[in-house]
Length: 417
Image (cartoon, rainbow, N blue to C red; front, side, top):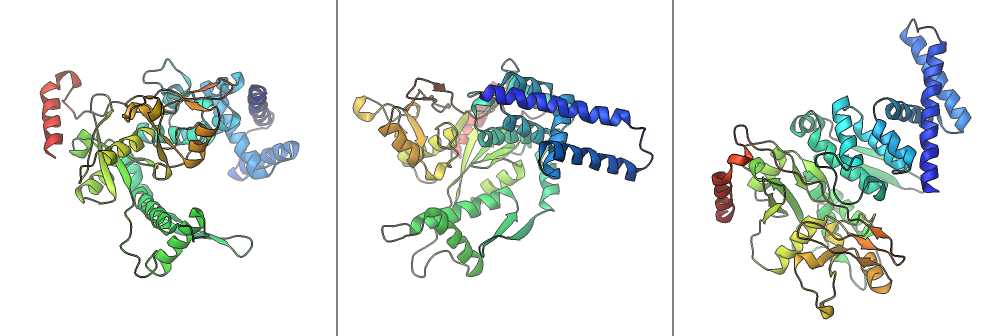
């Protein structure tokens, strides 16, 4: 039935595009911009009335239909075949907006063509819940956008702002549009302080505590009661390509629980020795993790950070619970001979940790750099969502096949640092 719904959505898209083309063909060319705008308004109103939706929704639907039928053939074919849902197709349309044809085609191929060079690994596009699929698509788009992330970030910083929106029941929303590293640090610090306030006598939920902490930080300058000790650190991983850290390239880094960030932002975080940020370097040959930076050597802590870096979130299909709130779990139980190595560990949020131990759901095997998939009680297998790692960008004039001495120098540098 889900595949039928997807095919029906594809048919609706094609009918909408055909109707829009026919309406344009039946009219003489518009003589003024005003006349062109009026015709577009009329077209949108007709679609809205026929489908009993608002005009804003109708306008978005017409735009999506045009994109899918003119510049995203692979996405439309996947929708028609039921390989992806309508939500997935809309995400592809949204994330290719503003890209040229070549960049849009490359994004389509990466996620929808398993034969494409460096195709997306792990679960297929249609196997990911839309929110997780959007996160992967957006991260890939940021890394492969024709305009560098550095340039786009500089432009976007100029648009930073705070917004206020009244809501029902005497409530309101306050939001900040700001640089990702600062936003991540604010979120993680609020979460850490909120978790520190939890206890058997605390009736507030973590969500409520986080809001109360943020309120106090903004209005009073502190999120903790007087005398409660120093503020907790926000624990964030920053994954930085080696050459990018050295300043030889501007390849984006990866901020835990956010996605790609400009190389300059990552270099600044590392250079300033931000105590809340842990550096992760990746191998220039294949993009695999190479080394975890740390100030104090404790076997359990580096292993936990490696697990966080590998999985990024709860490994259960569709779950987006972030790393900081998850629990490390033995895939094969300790009492059954399971080891405490990275290949026998997985991140689980408390909810799905309980599900694993109380029901027939079971995780599949993991690897050093690959999280586990899952098997349901009915035997259905769900592939793991895996990070789209790829070889880092090499500096001009420095080719991988000539890199053996350079690789040795890099490893020596990492050990020394």
